[in-house]
Image (cartoon, rainbow, N blue to C red; front, side):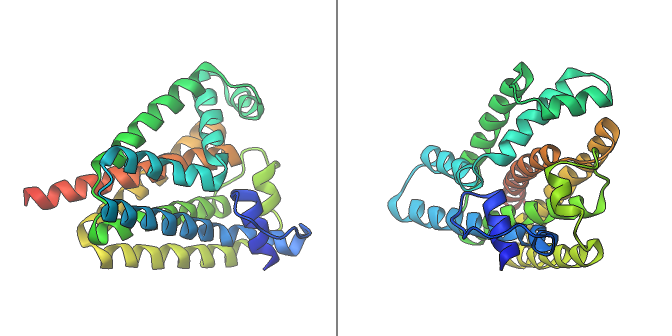
Length: 255
């Protein structure tokens, strides 16, 4: 349970008891990362039901749907998205990009990319129809994205060999962590497709494409992953899932 409390304290604003961050507890903390996605998914699904019951329109529904994951995570992943945007926009060498990731100042590329991202994600939430089983597929999106983020952390090289991400991955039994995170992903994927074959499959394709981009980009641009890059991936993955569900819903209508 200490590992769960550490994961909640690090990756969310959810209340959790204060515990000692010992090596054994840290070695399992990342395996609990998808639990935060479960909480976010439950809040999203509850919000979808409330919107349906009260007849709330797409704009307010979309705005709150966008804000729920950011509020629960304390914007830690959005911060990583902004830092990564600054580093990628600099077009500097690898060493300089890694320095930019650690810089606490916010550059122009971070502001521009964050604004564009939030506009796109808001529009996607307004366009998607979170009804029936598609609502449950969307609610599982935050679980899927966190499972993939955790899997990347235990399978990909660390660009620095140090830092916050290394604090969680270095003491970890990587082989067992891969199995546990793989189980999270397997269960999530099966549920998504079983709930709604069209939108479930579409969401998995969207998540997979964003994951492949993340792995290729991080290795090519940074030589591996970091905590900021993990946050960047989480944001684009969750947006990709919603966009993919929209395409799945449109495909059903056309066919």
